[in-house]
Image (cartoon, rainbow, N blue to C red):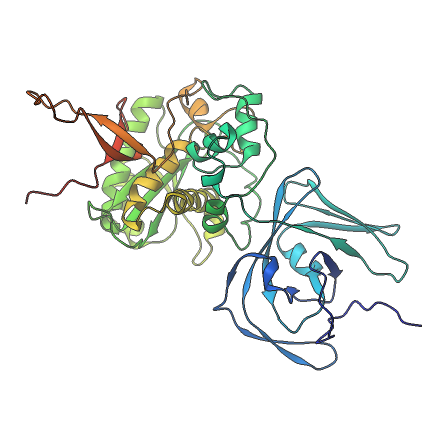
Length: 429
């Protein structure tokens, strides 16, 4: 009698079935022998894997496998090793559990749910006591081929947030000017390249602020290269714990952070009518200096510092930092813009995320939670798109162009204007 085996088969001589994947509690990592299934792969990741029979095989890369659910939604299987000699595709149950998936086996049925507890797979045990699933391998959607789809257009305008989030904005009437989105979740090339993550931070804290500015989370991200045209290497992100509203400041050096916090405090207190009570940051020198400590004591601001090497204690801003950078990276990669525009991209990402749904708020955006009214989004445009700017220079000649093609790089804060970049402009100095 010949029985199917759950362990890896090496050099079996047969072409492996790319759609059949075995769920294995003994596998330390997701593994496949087919390069064709990867939507992206990092060939620089190498090493060796030793199997139960003592055989040692080489790893020739690690990447992401994208598959389509029956609903048409795209899901990622990340951290998959490429082992060309492998004839069996393996999904590590342990790796799924480590990535916060919920796996349950009862009465011959294995169910797998994602971080939001949505059902991803329902697998029945085979007669030989194995759990195997057939994945519909797919590819990330190229946005250049989908520009006519209004849903994809708004996916780009909203900085590559998910279609689920776009639907929530419309269905719960959280913004004005956004058209109805009737689209399943899919993944575009920009999202796949810009948003891959390893492990999520722990669940939200037990205590939540009850008043604006009761608690503000702060963190500095950088050093980011290349520098922006204005010479910034870092950005400071501040998040109000109650509303999850964000403020961002570009910094040329970390020691500019205290001055940026002073400006934020004055503006936010005037706008909200509340006083800043607690500022939570890490133990960076810019936050622990004697001068800044004296300022906080003078203003009655309590400082909370995370334990060394424990960024999870300030998880609110750490997660938002991750989201901001992921969105900015997606927008830059989707349009092929150079890295020097990262400052414009992160500023635009914060502007968009303040007008986007978040799990921390029920039925409203951070903008509404902070300002008390729904934001308008009809003026949104796709980051990196071409825009023709009216030439308002006086005494134009009859045959001179009345507009100049430029690149849209964001929204001007405090003004009803867009930020544009003229690639033909040269500094006269």
